[in-house]
Length: 466
Image 1: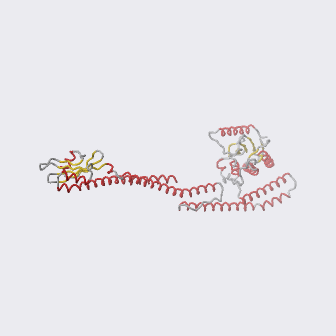
Image 2: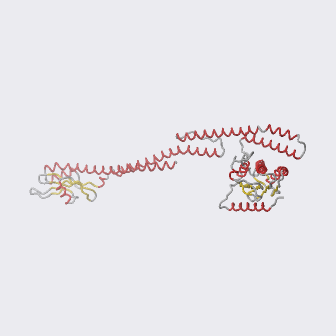
Image 3: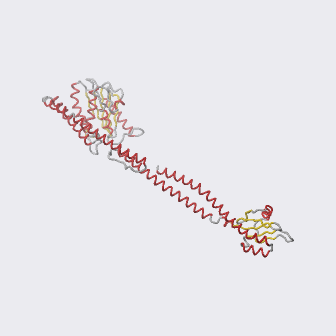
């Protein structure tokens, strides 16, 4: 916007300067010409009284010498009274021009080499005498060049001044707009303390006021949401305490131990939610270099937890790829939450006795987790990925798949829902190891990833349920 304003001002000022300077320059040139011929008329007027009094050659030569140089003035007397035609001074005009002026009886000018001549007729008793005054070209253009130079300098100064003023005005307009853009970027990056100085033109000042007000409201809304999440999570402490006391009285059976472990884990999750809400830290974030967890270990642990329930419901379970360590840049608690969300969906949305499988594949630059089942499948996978939509059944909030999606996207990966070889749903979690955005179109990395995906599916189909 700054340079656009400068260009517009430069164009407008240049047009104005040209529109005024060119006609003014022509007027100056014409005024210099009129001044030169006015001086010539005054010189000719000095000779007219002498011609009215006498036609003596000697006296007229003295008058011409007194009026101007012999080289600049000439007098042409007609023949009459027994006297031949008389020419005094240096004649520059042609005989035809002199005859034409004598015939017309009025002053005229004629172009001659080196300048112009003024032919002034004077009526005498003998006829019409012609006074010729030479006007050199230097006298006609005297001062014109200087005047034009002054006009050009003034025009250039006006253009430069207007450009400087436009540039300052553009800076005054652009800087607040640029600060507003930077503030919006910082706010979008999560810097909630970003504010914009309320200065500049009135429109941008009002925009800055509105932006700062919006930022304050965003901070307040986030604070309210955090407090609400913390309060709602805190309300779970009472029923959890009851569950923990009831679990303590179940005895020492394996089911009792699992129940107590589940209650302890649930208490830990509630405490984590409360701390996260209070500290305003995201629950899912990419781990730094060297951080993360062993996906195979987490998968074995969670499958050991869910296998007891699967055995009770008569479900066949298969786990593959968890026999070797697989390091991923994901926080352990986040991976546990994602696996529990997917496995919980299998138990929640498929009938008892439905088989399911979990496969872990370690690639060169990505790790793939496949959770498949033999259930009825998902009619609309895209709608199932929408946060908060759920399946429409009781107890479904639609947040489980969103938790999985945010975990994958935090590493640069993604989540896909498709059809399983078992006949039901297959959820594929793509966890990027190098933290880059997954490239898909026209890139060798995308070809490699598609090949890995095909190998994973082939491996999945080649295994059979126990």
